[in-house]
Image 1 (tube, rainbow, N blue to C red):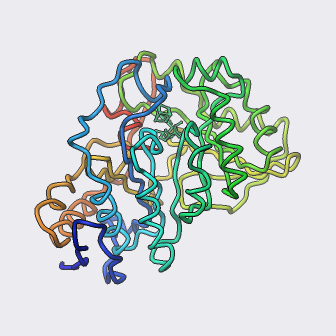
Image 2 (image 1 turned 45 degrees about the vertical axis):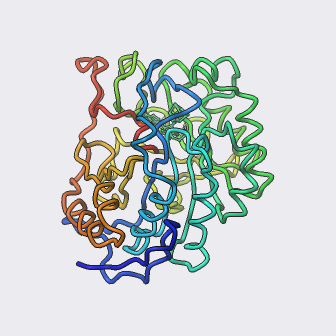
Amino acid sequence: MSINVPVPPEGGAALAAEPAPSPLTDRFGRVISYLRLSVTDRCDMRCVYCMSENMNFLPKRDLLTLEELDRLCTAFISRGIKKLRITGGEPLVRRDIMRLFEGLSRHLKTAALAELTLTTNGSQLARYAKRLAAAGVRRINISLDTLDPEKYRAITRTGNHASTLEGIDAAQEAGLAVKLNMVALKRLNEDEIVPMIEWAHGRGADLSLIEVMPLGAIETARADQYVPLSAIKARLSERFTLREVDYRTGGPARYVRIEETGGRLGFITPLTHNFCESCNRVRVTCTGKLYMCLGQEDCADLRAPLRASPTDELLHQALDAAIARKPKGHDFVIDRAKGNRPAVSRHMSVTGG
Ligand code: SAM
Ligand code: SF4
């Protein structure tokens, strides 16, 4: 198929394409409407479940430029992507990243894109929250696994709890709806889930709990980190009244409302209950690799077709071929026998969350 996205003069960002006739639909009939774009694999933290202490990062020369990232997003939007999440690594440590947000906001103005959002560890938000809001970001996911500054340092290895809390304040002051992400970690923060619910809901933020996934080699056996959220939910329902709600944000979380706090609690359960049958997502790394599933190794290179031609025809051909291969689902398993062998070799910081 052929879709020509106008190429801007002087290597600037491409203009928004006309809505394309063919949305990205896989062989199981799932329509792809959600792109997660990792703009860097680097990070100012080293969370114990995400990275190993000594990581080898991609050489900077391999990264797509901001202009290329914009062109790639624009091509996806022309094929029906409605929700775009910028992630990493830590997206806000990429130099000049606000230029990407500010450029992409034109697609919000034309309504070609319904939502531009990001996942961040919060460390840089005090600096950027207002500019993100001005670029049209309305909701933001911020990772926070504990309310205890010392534990925060132990989990993130290099993070500063006070800076992250300042970032959360700044996001809320800028008018962004905040959802906190908390990875449930055996013995590390299980006992903090109730205080975290009360803290988040007390300040008008949603909270999502996440099951740890076996992505990338780390120092610890995954079985020593993993807590099934089914068990946590059962424990929570002894203490709170949990009402299932239809609220959806386009992602994998399933929500309940807690009557006692009035707030929403999400459960992201790739292991105990996977939702692959309704998966509407794909992921692109900062070097232009398209992963059709977070839990599989198969990927397609988009950088070569992007660079091979100033028009997007080759890119769209590569997209069609890749989406046709989107697998039915992941096959994550965490058990003792696997030790710390990951299900896939990539760390979460490469494809982002
Ligand atoms: N640096 C940003 C952050 O931490 O929010 C964005 C990237 S981070 C990879 C995205 C999300 O993935 C975070 O909420 C993080 O807690 C989560 N995450 C990282 N590694 C994970 C793993 N192995 N299993 C489950 N969630 C993970
Ligand atoms: Fe960095 Fe986010 Fe991974 Fe933590 S979870 S190491 S903050 S990318």
